[in-house]
Image (cartoon, rainbow, N blue to C red; front, side, top):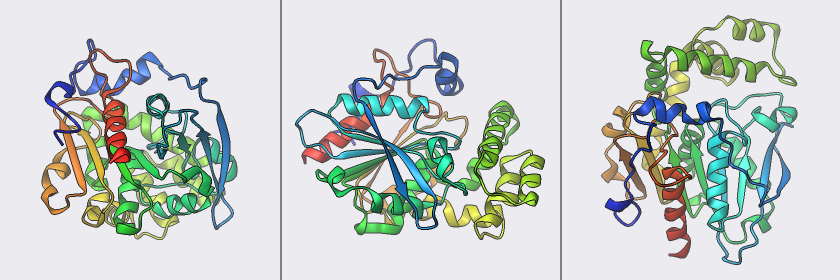
Length: 328
């Protein structure tokens, strides 16, 4: 990884955003939203087999450099307009990549086309979305970037597909590779405010029209007070799992890492207040040379606001990595 993250390029927090919590909260506190006006977006609708569809924003890029399409996947309760997605899109567009900001099933602009809801292991939605993309958009290949829950989904997909995955390279940021541990970590007392925010957002997203829910499901969603209860009583039974623990066991990316064959960068901060670092330390990365972990002492959850740059450190690192792969 020395070619990607040299000593001079290591993450150094920007004042006054010291510590994992402030790094995590900066996007919320500053309400930053990276402008993308220089790259007008085209709305795409990608049909799924069951009649739902995913909405996406495609940004062509006039720079004649033949770089691959960069597909960006948001995290839990996010969308194409999440601050971190827009910042990543702006960074990659500035480097010459065409970009596709994908909304998962029932998220953001996809909600209008979806009766159902995404979850951390719904990798077949990604598979179907890729099949629905016009081949011309991928004439120079395709790379993928997944944030948080979207990173777990992307890793699961890559592990399932192995050498058949269409991506030239991939990157994930702050991914909860062990869903059970991540859920327990988020529900810890020190994270009470984060947890309350997330469960409220998840419940609002799940019941938004035109979601098709039974009266019992709506009552369940109103009643739950924790991420675990939401997964155990709504997500799991709705998707054929025996309960939250079964859902976590089948969908955690850590169980699919051995199967990944696409060169994949994994960025995670050890002070991430939402996602525990133990699963990253427990996995033997030497087992799979396709995986390139970059574990930083600080950076928070999808934070990485660094000294000397407006663009987040993880975006600049990913752009450098993907450019190196594309030119290799």
